[in-house]
Length: 110
Length: 118
Image (cartoon, rainbow over all chains, first blue to last red; front, side):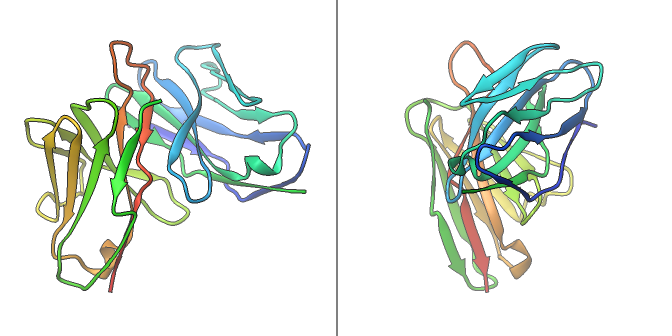
């Protein structure tokens, strides 16, 4: 079956530090890949997505590239802000179903 | 963007009682909605797919008689936890796929409902 593995948190960074959250997946066929973010007290919302190999999704300074050869979709941001503190979920969609990773909590300190 | 709303956002009930959670798509129609359960420090677990006009599709290991799902209209799906027990305490989240002809695969999520069974 499909699965998503992402690095365990929590991740604590100082403001303006570089962020990488690793995500790898296992899936049949050609899934679409997503990063969702859950800010404190809010529901999940889409951060970025990529639908085919080598696509790069980007939003709010975050980027992730769909790497078929390494089955990865790592999330990166060059300079994090305190407002980026949230839980980040990597996910894949194959057919109707969406499979989520366990989530990585990011805490950015001033 | 599309909005999905859940109600109530939190509920406390006694063991043995039933609790209903509503999920509404506010500005679009959703023939399909998904119900997830989120455990602390764990991923979202898909419980079932709610289908308007037909029976819900449950994931393996999810008790149909325990978690009743009704997709009453194109904008409303409900999850009823019947005869709730403390182990049913959790965070329940609904979602609906992006509307329109171009299904981007994106899901729109409700705010979640925290159930505590005493």
